[in-house]
Image 1 (spheres, rainbow, N blue to C red):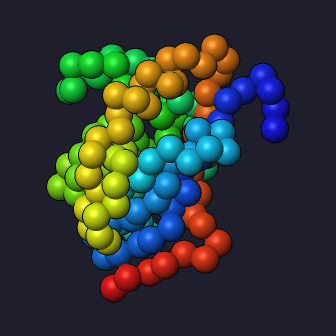
Image 2 (image 1 turned 120 degrees about the horizontal axis):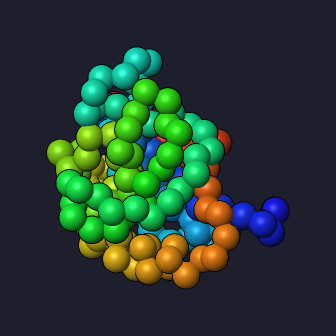
Length: 141
């Protein structure tokens, strides 16, 4: 791994008809659970997760949330993509939600955003986030 950069890894592991669940790693260390809108073959605004890829991740002030949050940059056909707290697909419009606990296939709980912002703030090199699917993906209809 390149020591000039720090990587956050979002690994999607469960897909349902309304959302996709995953795990967030800071480097190689597990940090928390994630929940996003379901993947679709075409974008439906506010109802589709972002494409897999590697994106710069920066801490910026969110006008919507009125606080500093991690923002994914250069996501094609999306803007304002942020990691933030929430529990279900109703709490996101394409952004990954972060929480400590996976309750079931449709709910996460216990927002992890405060600790995530704190940990990312301490990193003094460029940060990138890799978004991918786990090899043995679970699909729930």
